[in-house]
Structures are given as C-alpha cells and as structure tokens.
Image (tube, rainbow, N blue to C red):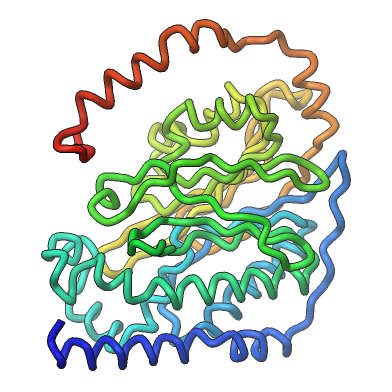
Length: 363
C-alpha cells in the first residue's frame, strides 16, 4: 500500500467510525416513543415481515430512525417477532464519501464486481472498508429497538469480517431484552456473490421461550436440504429474507420458503428488500406463510404485501398450538435410512466434480 492509499484509507475509516458511533444512534432513538410489543406465548406469537426500501443515508442515526419507523408499524400491528430483509445495510453505502455523486454518474455494484480485487473501486475493497461500520450500526440499532419495543428482531443482514479478512453475509437476531441471540451467515452465495463472499458452514437453531427458529438467508431456501435439516432439528418458524431481482415472478419466488414449508412443516416469514439504485433492482412481494392443511381452508399465505416495489409492513398471528397438532396428525414422511445410504456419497461425488486445485469452481 502506498503512502497516499494509506492516508486515504485511514481517513475514510475514521469518517466511517464517526458516522457509525453508537452514542449518536442511541441519542436519536431515545427521542422516540415506544409502544411495547404483545408478549408471545407458547401457543401464539405475532409476526411481521418488513419490505424495506433502500435509500441512501448519511449516518447510522438516520439508518436507525428508518428502522425504528418500520419496527413501530410492526409492533402496532401486533408483532413481537420482526424480520427485516437481506442486505438491509444497503442504505449505508451512503456513508462512503461521494457515494451519491458516483451513483448519479453511473456507478454500479455489478461493474465494481468486475474490477480487479486490488482496485480501490472493486466491490470487495468497498465492502471490506464498510464492514466494521455496517456491523456496528446493525448491532446497535437491533439491540436498541429490540429492548425498547420488547420485541424479537432480526435486523437484516450485514457484511461480517473474520480475522482472516473473509466476508460473510450475516443475519443478526436480537431478543426482547436487547441481547444478541445469535447470527447466521449465508450458506449458499449466489453467482453475483461467490467472487467475494465466503459461505457459512453451520445452520444455527435458536431456542426462544415460545418456539425454535432458524434463519437461512435468501438463496439457502432454494435447496431442500436446508429446511429439511432445520425441520429434523425441531424448528417451528423459518425466518426468510431476500434481496432478489425477479422475486415478483411467481415461479421463481416459489422455489423458496413458500414451497419449503410445504415439505417441512413450519411457519415461514419472508421479508424482501427493495432497491433501485447502483444497478440493483431488488423487489418483493413479502409474505407470511403456513403449510397447506394447517388451516381449515386451503390458505397457505397468512399475509402478503399488496405490492412488490413499495415499502410495506405486514403482520400475522402464528398459531403455534395448531402447528404442534398439525405435525402430530401427519404421517412420518422422511426416509432417513434412504438419505443415509445415498446422500453422503452423492455429495462427495459432486464435491469432487466442482473442486479444482482445492477451490470450488462455479458450474
């Protein structure tokens, strides 16, 4: 790194740290009113999916206030479990100097992904620079909103760095007391992400007072194994969140959580991000879904956003007692011996085909 690059990097990092400071976020949120969420029970919980519009913000306080307004809508709608979308951090691109000017001039993340990794304008360099500020802002915002509303909040995904500098697309879940319950890195990067994102290696299960939760990220739901593993481990509610183009095309949307809950009996909450800047065109619709047969009618969608490209918050009550009864009434449909017989060797054969020089190839 040249002296010029070092000075510029140090200056930008100092600016980002200042814009992300927790005291400013806490101070901004302290001035707002907080209705308390209805506390969930073992039999029922109110849930919300936040279809969030990405708009550039100047600092962490502005981001937190935007999340506050959406979380308040959810709480006032009866929710105690609130799900924000994947890439909820996108508005934080506004923290970067001249971000708005660059976007107006035609900067796109797609083009940045094609830049050499050593280039200052490459997506990996940009995200590595932003990552500490994103993590700090998401954690402070999630902690404050959860404790003040008394709600369980999945604040969306951020870019997390490990000690080796690897980047993960990571979701954060906070308890009603504001404590961080846990995180979940994305397990299946998309073709756009695989050049810079490291896939996670663990599917985490979170046991809350009212239910067991899992929160695979977006593309993770395109693979039946993800939700089957969660179901075999007793998950009651699957938190889903995405940042997808073409999510409003029914046949594409149905490859995700809406179909997964039909084979792995659970409730699903899908929160979609909306973005139409920097070459991104993410959309909804968002929804809350149950397995067909859990209700007396044939309804699977408990709630859906009216639009796919407008910011909305939807809520629904999840009947956990009914879920338990429904599961007990269903015949066992998982042939575990068959899976043990074939899947390990099938996966090993696939791994051998897509690995070259110790690295995974895109096929």
